[in-house]
Image (cartoon, rainbow, N blue to C red):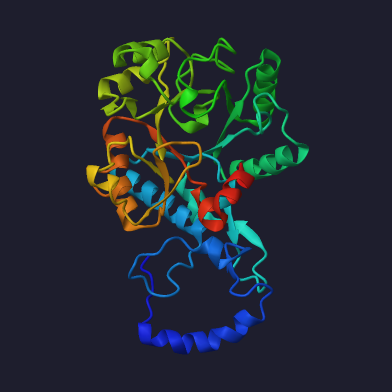
Length: 371
């Protein structure tokens, strides 16, 4: 959507009218974004050097919705049945009702809900903050309410809890099945998901039927780093020897080596011969120096839309995801990241990093609070 710009000469006049309103606020300069009161220091991303005053006042949640909607539109133009599934960020399912005078009422984000096909939420029952921990009653209730909202709007729900003990893994499967969730028992986090799970030895609700859409998925597998399996064909054949309904993998088998179309096609078949879905994991909220799109000249001067480093993760940075430079990398034609995923034969994409909006709203503390 085009952004309206005011001429620079209008700003002094406009500020004269706005000053009394800001002066009466509880915190000077406070503004509202997506139904929340936020401080300008929380709401201001690093603007372009030539940006007009006020361009930093961004509704970061709405901008993330718009990015995901743009990704979905781009994908549908190239493959109608390509699935879009965000990780976490369940707050995006609701937005401010602008007809409410106090702007406190929350309503379903209708366009966004029609854009995505499902949601994946980490640590719904267990695993927060540590592996096998039973989550607080408040967290469980809050997440279940939001996941029910997703189901009520026809979205599939996937849950991935950090559990390693047999009893806890079994409980995860039972609790998820009871609520209609597809579950994965994550034995580790992030790139340490690099092997087939040992517990349980078989997928939850294992079956020999084909899974042709997310509605058919009752279990799934996540492999974030497949390099330890050896060659691509060895990795594809080992995963082929399982009966998961959905397999989620990184686009790259090793650094700079994308999985081939042949490997992706092999992953699409269960051990019993039925078909299954294969999704690619793509981070749209951070940029990594080890990804194919990183340019040598960025070592000395990062693009203006690359922000602070992600804590604890070397060579990965938050990005101003609303900026054209980043969108060009993701969906800028036939050389873009998402197009490459579609062209390699994946059935859908798992969008990670969408909670980067927390960083731009309130810094690293807001990121940690949202986990």
